[in-house]
Image (cartoon, rainbow, N blue to C red):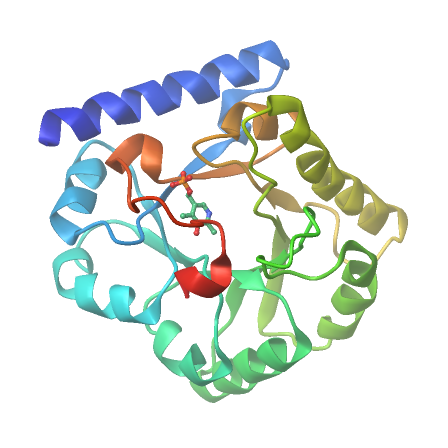
Length: 243
Ligand SMILES: *Cc1c(COP(=O)(O)O)cnc(C)c1O
């Protein structure tokens, strides 16, 4: 098990490096986040001992269950799943970044809680660039107004945009949903919104990380290629079910 994880991690880093080379990008511009939903803490620990430090979890329950084993490790945890407003307070105990900010009511609730605690948090705005009903995220056209609106919440540090791309067996069908996230970022730059000059793109998973890097990803979120398959059959990309 340990050897497998270490081997897989090397493979994934090779894939990222190769994708960077192929698109003339600097490998230091692309970070790897381990998507660890359903992965037990001991396996995560193996990856951390191998040098990883960025973990993404989708559920409050899993953050809590794994916390005892993980909290003393030198890691950063991000929340990458759909976040219900009533879980905000609990999730904030564990994470340094919310990558799934997708609605005003959530921004409001986060701000309220963060103000109480006297702290800030990093956020990524989740965008539904594949236009699939099974995914959360703002419609692309709503992103700029949304960002303008949440600028008033000074506890939320807007770090970038996140998407779950369209997954398909045909590679080129996956590219448009990744490219679109980059185009939305460019539009945000063009809109010259105060202080938003360095936005990162969180996109790319086991199946599409090469394409995502080619389209400008700064943060790939990889689970299966490192820890193996989670689910048998089923529609794994229905975020409603994953919830
Ligand atoms: C599970 C998950 C990933 C990783 O997907 P894999 O196909 O296992 O690499 C990335 N992003 C999010 C939001 C996820 O929930």
